[in-house]
Image 1 (cartoon, rainbow over the protein chains, first blue to last red):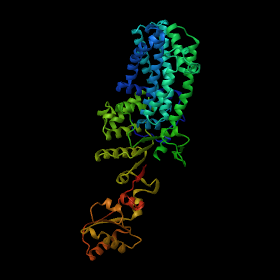
Image 2 (cartoon, rainbow over the protein chains, first blue to last red; image 1 turned 90 degrees about the horizontal axis):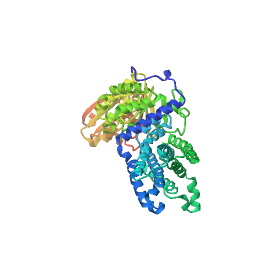
Image 3 (cartoon, each protein chain N blue to C red; image 1 turned 90 degrees about the vertical axis):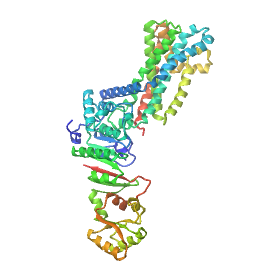
Image 4 (cartoon, helix red, strand yellow; image 1 turned 180 degrees about the vertical axis):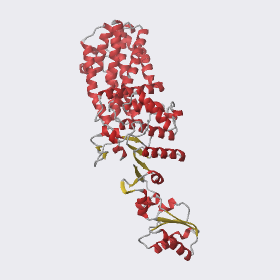
Length: 270
Length: 289
């Protein structure tokens, strides 16, 4: 570099970021997030401990009562916990995003001519790793406890991919919370209020038929139920059913609503 | 205001153009023209110095090889090559500030905003920062910097604007601002501090009420000259210093030291704003081309 400065007259200014730039900036931001994870490994605590703990705990507590015995409950509970851990992992996405935005470096990201979606999409892409770890560990715990999915290797792999996709899609809700809330604690609190109804008012732990009618109505449209139905079809039956289509549609709807909201509120945030 | 010009905040009133580009309607273009170095270092704590610069380089559209080369080059220029692979959280304030400025220069921007770049730096690091700023100006950059240290403005700026309580109260070259207050200042220190007020009114009488501006009565002047009995008197003409000294002698007011010099920007600031110790930060924005 010979000079430190290029004068304004010799610059060609672009009016907007191209798609190519947006993708490359998202990858750069994902790289940054991965570096951060590598240096703060405690960020993986939730996705490592929760699958082990919850899978064992819920299976032994509810197994006898709901399915008669532990082994018969496994096809229900493992798939339910897969969805639950993905949802908890995306709650952390929102809190960490909020914490991150407090930092001075975000002033620089805002002052750079870069796509406004990249600072959000980058860390969320890196978080795919977390969803993958959570799903893998839940499945491994299940296998150890005697879960033998009927869908075979292909069915399990497809279910695993669906869990990761669902985690990524639902995390846009929490990313949006991260951009509108003032503190990480507020994101955490609001996240809990969303996470608990979504997981427990679904068919994750109990068959929906045992619920009162008005509650069943909600359970049926809950995106988490859609995802769990699809995972069960894939993993337990090895069947690609309409449920898979509904789950993907539900995920797409969540992204279509919350991604624009998140980007919009991020770009006007002070 | 700086946050508005750098598109970090929306402009709530009025209009701003930078190199003919409207800030409000073309924020994306503005971001390609300006480099910003804030009061608080905007670099990533979790990354190393080299990783930070490479990340910003990549975000600005450099290829990964070019980003690496630029990072290496800038680290060398700012004397940070030894710290290249250390995480920023272990950096000192001065090193962060230099890295921050380096990060602002990746795109080689023609306009650079520096928000109090030397606040809290030790004199040696401040001197290095000044040298870097002079280099930038020599390379053709326009630098807009805010500072609370008026000698910094005097050292670096071609044009100075004085902002008091959010309003611009004066603007010009440092020379113009100094002459606006008086050609020179007589500084005396009295042997008997109790007679400061008497001496001040005497000087005022000698110089004529209108032409002389006398600063001793203001709390500010004592703040600037902490020693008791210090008095700085603005002179309409340096030759009249002797008139004041003779008058003091005939009134039997003894002096310890006396000197005539050009007013400093500190005195200009006091004279223009009429106060010094204000909780509202007195800010000086200076521009160098």
